[in-house]
Image (cartoon, rainbow, N blue to C red; front, side, top):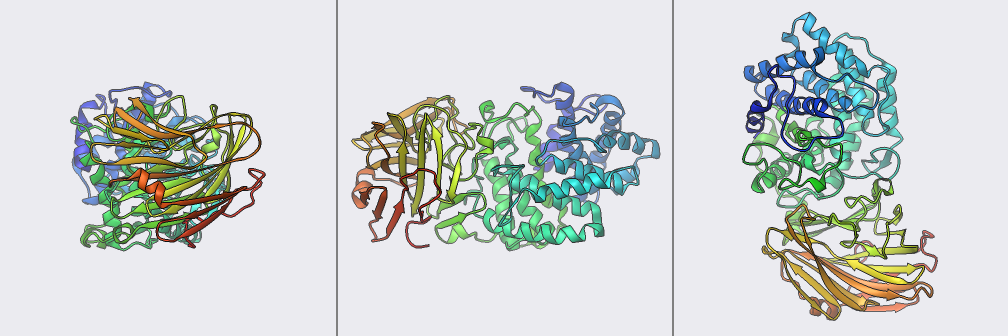
Length: 585
């Protein structure tokens, strides 16, 4: 696959090899920077491929020529907080990992041209998030070749990420509650790559990074479905296979709780998932989208070559061919054995995963990326089989009145509150098998409360059906989304969408509705199900016993399991308890 991706880019190289100008919508950084992006991100993949076979003359010649021409003037200079810094980091890492076959073969004047361009990092300023690590690896490469650099810059960048470490192996990507795939493909990746560049001088920090990565992977193993699909959550989703990067890094640093067979299963499974869904496309190109070209899932900084950060998902090519990860048989993951419910207090997540259909659901009570209203952060739940609806009105996996939600306020991994439409809303999730019960407390001015389930989408129109207090949408492959009103809701319906979902042009979201009179706190209780199997909404409602006494909700499931949820009178005061799994867990 690495060869196919790299060879498919050949027609898009500029005459001097310095730019890879792919067709498609440009980024806000301009065509020259987009061309640099195509070179740099594919060069990272080429470097891994070169190292994998002890050199590849075709790739070395192709990228060495473009490297010198680009650094000599075809690439924009590195200026503070410029997109060029991102791409320069890829080039620095690629030069290190392919050093013996490429850098060492350049003559002194050619090396100096590249050093002069990378020297734009020294003493410069980056954005205060994962970008700090671009400067770290860029200047560490300069240090490794005897060029001027600033140790203070390197130390400051590595020290800065300590401020964002929140425990259990998790970082925030910058200040706040920024938890997404960047934690694996940036916050753990670049420190690990830096240790490979810095050598013995990194030993003190290496021990810390290994311990944290090991702990992170204890959680991260639960973030991929049995079909290899990552959870569709957070920004830069067009990077796709990059989601495998932390698993590979765990093997590279000998810092993983996973067996070699499990690592191979996760990484090859993620690649296989996208290949099975048409990635790359018929031209051999990675497009802006998820399974297909879909611009609404992207950000303004994403240019035509942005998806080639997928190169990070090929990090395992740095492992020798006789490494156990390549020789071991793929091994079972926890979800292959049984259903999984895992609370992750550091990011504020609960993972709900079911063995029979291989779906992983992320219940989000902790990540909001600055409260910017991004649909890839402001939903109550995400999954490996669905994506949020990208429309002006927020409905899927959301509870609220009309208006924009403010920052999520975490109570515990299964509970949070926020303000929307002038109201305060608290939600507590209780998980039981494939069922998530959402206990809601609304307090504020009168209005209509709408609560949506998962949006299902595909190339064919989903089947939909409704009852008095339930609604259901089913995709052609039988993936089914259901919401059932258990207490306080008055009607149910399904909203259809067109070209608003990354999983296909036709989408449907079941939802519930209740009129709120604004006379003090009101409790609402619903059941939400996303399943690859048949769901019986009416029977589901009949199997659950719900008792509400003031702000106390008692749930009894069909198997006798009981859960008690205290929704505090003062919404958002941080009190109350919220079991993450329904039963004592």
